[in-house]
Image 1 (cartoon, rainbow, N blue to C red):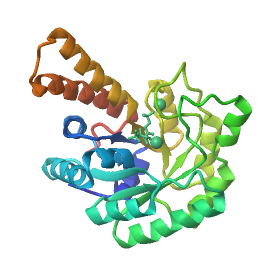
Image 2: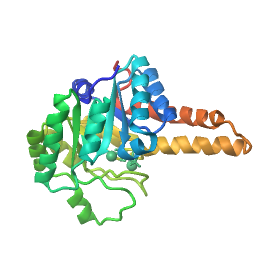
Image 3: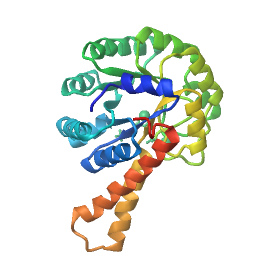
Image 4: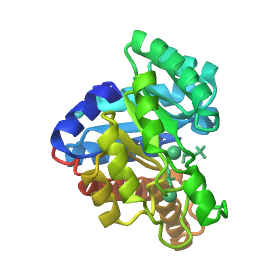
Length: 283
Ligand code: G3H
Ligand code: 13P
Ligand code: ZN
Ligand code: NA
């Protein structure tokens, strides 16, 4: 069934594990995610970015995930990833999303708090959850110096204030991860994470988690991360399997023969993540 983010994160907090949040933009990826969750007996967050919604259409994304959730014996959250447009956030809530992210991280603290609090008021009134972001989680393409890297990271005391004043159900923090493929190995600031977790009772979200070594993920979960976002690793598995299928049979014209293996490959990656996050076997 479809549930809110707050519900699955409450359980995760009690159990000391993280719930996987996987990005989708088509039917095969939604199926890959739900198949992995059902097999692993794991709660799951299926999320769509504004770009994914633009690509597939809000109605299609909503229908796909609703269908997946209605047939699954595991809790499923339908979540907007990196909502930056207030109107888009409202459209998602009206369409039946059970959770939205309002990403006001590009604004000064006061403005981020004001925008996020406004979304929390509306979403909570509609029975949905909200994720906010503090600190800048960039992309791996951005070349930044160590001092600049520090400056983009989440300040623990600001995080405490942000969580208290907005009332968000989950807080995304910048502790050294980045969106997309890493060049080299990412370095996470675990000390910062520990301080944030000590000051902030709100469940913490780790973005840019593709390509982060499993042991670092486990450590982050031990230090209080409760939602882990994965997109790039799904894309890599999906496209590599597509390429392999086409290379093996360049004359193939049946999409099912190409996208079927891609769906399976994505599901395998997602299953592995669920084991690492500790959410497998929790339903
Ligand atoms: O955080 C970004 C997600 O990976 C979604 O990316 O905006 O290309 O859909 P996208
Ligand atoms: P990756 O693509 O690096 O896994 O990041 C996903 C993410 O943070 C989505 O919000
Ligand atoms: Zn993200
Ligand atoms: Na990444």
